[in-house]
View (spheres, rainbow, N blue to C red):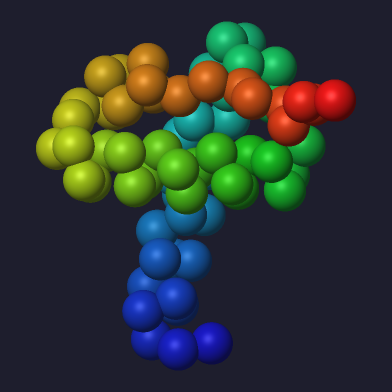
Length: 68
């Protein structure tokens, strides 16, 4: 793992715990893999759009990927 990926991974672990309850309540996401993905998207949205936590979480939706 390169240094950039390691830094992001370090940030995701606590962030995942911070959003876990809200993810379950609002989006129905509780699986570890999906929660980690959600935390990554949350971090990207928050950082790139310079939003507070609550505003960034409001931008997230559960897509599910069932298009057929």
